[in-house]
Image 1 (cartoon, one colour):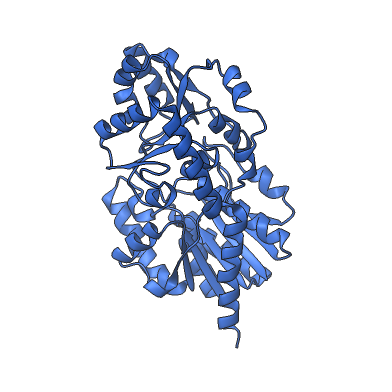
Image 2 (cartoon, helix red, strand yellow):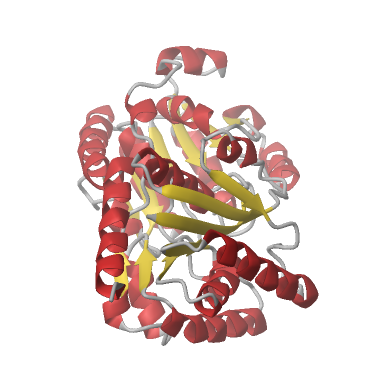
Length: 387
């Protein structure tokens, strides 16, 4: 098949890694794969080098930006049409909100036989502006009839989309976001060596996160309960993997609480370093306010770590409550504190939960599983649409 993936920008992020793994897996299966993207702009880091070195075709449309820019958006739409007419793909698969709207419009205008869109997170809940959310909801409703299959990374994405009037039930299929599992099972840097490099003592118990230091990721909730945790557990340390606009704000709060020495912030790290850093943790927490299905959850489980997360979006599909970790009421910091103290005090429970989570994640989130499921979606479409 000739497959064209379209995504707004190749920053370091879950949707982008999902898209690259799809391109790589399909290219390895012998498909003619093209990735169409805007420039990789932003403080999150770039995946452009990885894309351009993987062997498939990469087309960069400079006008494609994340922000709403009507003139550039129209130019992007016309450029997408031009590229798709040149490629003549069997399948166009769009990702992210901006590329998802413009890409589906362009694919429909070019009469592409199969149009697929993946919902990595709900665009119409992403903004703090009700006007922007309303606009994206309307656009998603308009684009849905142009789409032959809507892929969701969690069943919850399907349910919320249908509740918002986006698409019809028979358009939806869930394909969990795949990842390269091997580095988490056998990290390049063994956990004890990574912990030593980070200045973590053998008897420290490390509570870790993997997320941008930005709004809605829940780091403030960790800081709110940190003084009580530190008082009750002198050996607790916090390892934050990531960087972002709120780093300075968080560091000021740590200083004010006198807990700066309890926190390690790695800053921006390339994706290939994440498995070793997760391996250095004892517990992974993800108190985010909004996700599709956060990749940090299966990443923690793949490294055999128990996970605590708020019950939002697809969290229950990654973490089995009371079996591999805890899925707690959204934004309930008292329950968050209680569940963390339970795990901090019980190494045996941490091991039991971690091993259960690892088995669950391997069955559901391996890249090969995702690529095979997408293959089925594409094959069903091309068979059904062929005269």
